[in-house]
Length: 398
Image (cartoon, rainbow, N blue to C red; front, top):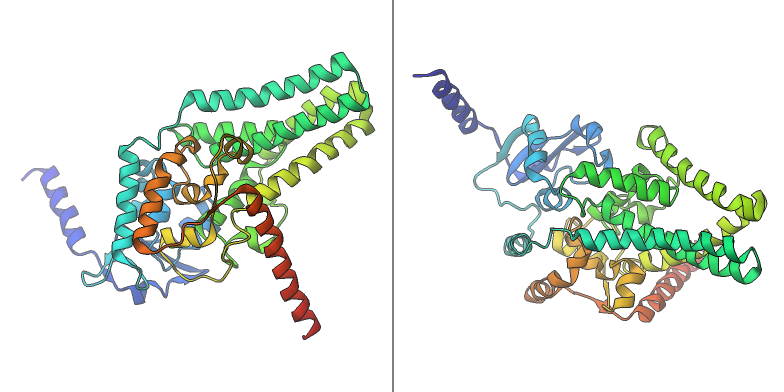
């Protein structure tokens, strides 16, 4: 027999002799120094790999001892490429009598959601429109140019300055939504191009760190509104330094501030330019906070309950009614449910998959919440008021 045939037999023999594990055994390996997870019934030891995981140590660690199949598919657009990194980590498979899902999750719901994802793939809903994103980037650059032209031709009077500030705030907010698209690898087929343009948009157009955003935001998507796992509800580590915020990120951010001050110091001076920047950030930050929190703060915020992917995302997210303004104003984050279920899907396709998501939720009695924009804002205030009352009661009766 030829050498190739012998190797094939050896490979087949290794597969048949692969160790099998029960969920009870796997769930024990969720410690800081001992992490296993399951993807498509295969068991992987990620203890050492987590330190080199491109998405960050914590996001993959949050699935230690669990079935990570749906999270794995949700975060990686190039599955065939990523699976190459899994091969050296493979240590076994689920025992034949074990269900594919852990902790009594509804297997039919899980399978139906995966079928829905396959339907979305067949509908080409993960294919981005170059025209859409080119025009979107173009309108941001156009606003930046318009702001400069206004002060160049109209001077630094109060009316011009206020109008200029509003235009810059709009540009910054829209750049924030655009960097979100590239950060989720939802524009280009190749991840490397998404990463490169992400650094340009968040770094050069906004003066922020791509690695800092990745470090926090992917954890949020993996375990939304879950204490100790979602940094958006932990509110820790405002700045990430060291290996997660490299010099490259600082250089991109520096390029933004250099461009900004070179543009406006000749008109406003150093102090005036600082005041202008602060005012622009003030307006943009309010826009950002209201939009990003309207989908999450009024929803369930609790400890880990080990739900399936669909139920986890729906418990923590809600939608805002669709309209041309709402789509633009929120960067399509009014489709927060669809975005959380399919984070690599280009945002211009959310409205196409939404009816199918609603139907699946209705089939299994999973709440699909959608509300008007102003009610969503009011719900933020109501949720904060409720939280404040709980803290006050705890303080007075401690």
